[in-house]
Length: 129
Image (cartoon, rainbow, N blue to C red):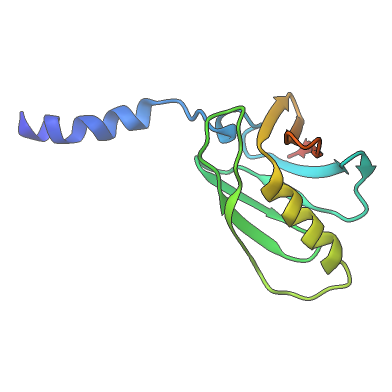
């Protein structure tokens, strides 16, 4: 009986639906940036949500990982850690990483992911498997 009591919270947690954007995103999709603040993306940048609370992707130069645990439709990308490779697109990458961390709302519309904030900033991504 004690064993059941101790394992019950683990079992219940495993059954709960992921209420973060990870639970609403296209499973195993790589989202490719299409538009940043109304301007077509000039460099390739990606975003993915492989597991609950985890964010991964690639900026124009470097891969990154971060955390995100807020319930959908909110998003807060934090603890972003990127590799340190230099390339000619570092300015675009800085812009991308800054924009990601500024976003506060997420909207998943089929293969389209829109991140936005109250200041009018917006990022539009399209899923590619």
